[in-house]
Length: 476
Image (cartoon, rainbow, N blue to C red):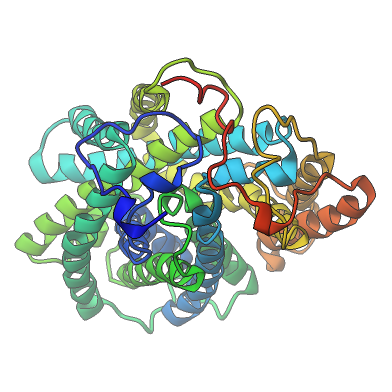
């Protein structure tokens, strides 16, 4: 397909269809657009809050916290870059690509988890932070602010991929400038030598902070190829990986650093993180920062709703409407609004728990899909991810469940459940993500050899357009 026949971006047009593969004549865009795609959604208060809890809740000094936050963010950004390179080859969404590791039916489990986490979980916590910022800025009731934020979020996701990409691009410039000024202001008032609880280095606090940072950065991993699948198949994979990974990493580290620094300022109140974060700022910078927090929530949740709808369809649910993805996104917005409304009275506690446990399922999933991709190197996958292929692979589901259950049972260290190891030795903190990833990867490698799931043909036999991926892609 020549470059001249590729379509151009159409941000005002509602994206039709669902999760079907993007054909060659609809491919467009540059790999470097992923830099802003994965920068903008991290320019929000959730990112800042990860830095806050590293110091205020886990008792780390600023530099100790930064070491943990950089480590966790780097690993999550690395996998984001790797997964993003998978989209252009077949033009498929991330949870559709997950079918090779789990089978068509087995993929329902991770797709359903991601649907709940993206379309409802992340949507709820981000909408609440955006609503509180808008309410603080304007004085309007939080529920009215929440309604405004949700309507804008849903509108962007409803229209679809090209508007989402355009919104992220311009948001990254505006939000980046505001948050850079806010971060400099915070550092001018911070006392980086302070350790909140007066303790020495805590390995447990370090693992908790690194796990939270990894969970946040890797929280975008199940969406990665959703936003690279429209790129031409001929794009350079290394450019795709660098653009996506750097966008994720730099934005996470800068805003987490701002949160960690803010927690060292005298009078910081963890129960009111938004108000405490902006309290030392001049009025103009404070108001701009509150606006940025509200817009940042939209930037993040446009992706969450869009990819939540994609995951819902990747579970194989047949919805016979041409605008099925858009309608599902609208439905998530309605349900998410009421969930966010119910979370407002205890937003801080809800936020903390969600940020800390997101990695519990992503790490085992990553272990499985990365090993699966390695074992399938040199083979095509278009022939096994379609609905009609009814491809099966029990190795993925078993490995995923083993990774989640065993790692949480042994190493979880959260308010709702403390695993066997931290109960006996609290100093270990939380190693659930590391253990879950290793267990998922090793178990899958062993079972793959035993189960011997079907492989596709040689990579050179990859069809130009993969047909039959969406359970309803025969709908015009």
